[in-house]
Amino acid sequence: MKRIILGISLAFSLCMQAQTFDVDMTKPVPAYTEEAGYGIDDVISRVCNGQSEDGANSQYISFLVPDGNYTVTMVIGSKKKAASTTVRAENRRLYIHDLKTSKKQMETVSFVVNKRTPQIDDKTKVGIKDREKLYLTWDNLLTLEITGDAPAVQSIHVERNDKCPTVFLCGNSTVVDQSFEPWASWGQMIPVWFDENVAISNHAESGLATFSFLSSRRLDKILSMMKPGDYVIVEFGHNDEKDKRPGRGAWYNFSYGLKVFIDQVRDKGGNIILCTPTMRRSWEKDNRTIANTHGDFPAAVRAVAERENVPLIDLTEMSKTFFETLGFEDSKRALVHYPAGTFKGQTNAFADNTHFNPFGAYEVAKMIVMGLKQTNSPLIQNLRPGWTDFNPSQPDDWNTFHWTPSPMTEFIKPDGN
Image 1 (cartoon, one colour):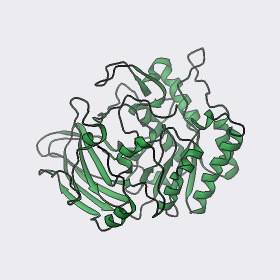
Image 2 (cartoon, one colour; image 1 turned 90 degrees about the vertical axis):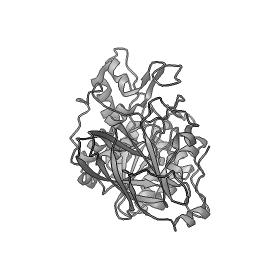
Image 3 (cartoon, helix red, strand yellow; image 1 turned 60 degrees about the vertical axis):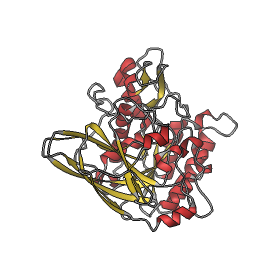
Image 4 (cartoon, rainbow, N blue to C red; image 1 turned 45 degrees about the vertical axis):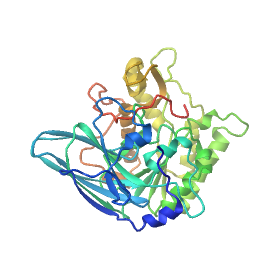
């Protein structure tokens, strides 16, 4: 059953809804109702017709709130047992990763969740794809997923936050908040590194290029939400490079599209950051060197950034180093490479050399943070204390990376390649 996308009449009525909630998680929480405005949400039935991985350990709780940023404060731990808790929001957006607490130990953690709907104003809305109509990202609820090996949450406080800066993300399937396991992207991993003074709003979608992003009014939506001083991070190229029509190459059409982003963001008082595209796992014949499948597109991003005096994060070079350091075989561990039967109902093997799995997306998110540090972005002042600097030539060990999967899986490759 599809979620109802918020229309303009409902948007006005939501303004009357509560924007602050307190939930005692030590007591039974009622099922979600619109009248109550919050509750335990049967997301699996609504999004994937009740199909889920066996042994899934996720609980969803949703809040009916207007578009905006919301500070979520959670007391995590248990008086009775040791716990290991992960918290994600909306489309598997990571905020708390495998937080371990001993018996009777309590940790208070705060973070900011951005919630939005497709509506821009009373006449226009984002042109979302059919597949996006099931996304938790675009509905009228702020949804939290509580999971982990042994999750334990004592309380949840949700409160509107109109002051913190927002970082808006623009891009394709390498950036989008992927809804289903085993797919993942850096845009849904990067929130875990920022404290309660920064919001991440990911507007990327699989299969998009610069102009399809613009024509579907996604930048218009961002500009309608943006405050002066907010940030926009842009990564395109994977899909732009497939358009072989005259004038559609890296140096004209693509470069012009990036200039449109720059001019419109700056006109609204925002700060824009450009990223070169992540590499594909495409090897030269020696199986030791990653081949450039992007042609002139990374160079075009660098040229536009230099010409327009825009900060640049070179994901092309960092992801190339990352793959080559892992090597021919182990680099598969960062992407959606899984034998048949890894997931319930998976009859065919996955061998995707473009789309990241949770480990790979987690590592690329660290590359973004390092890029912010290298460009001296003010955003790095709001990194969590647990952050340690990352070097793609010394990546984390995929053997020890721990991820509690969400219960929902999908075997259809995301749009784009």
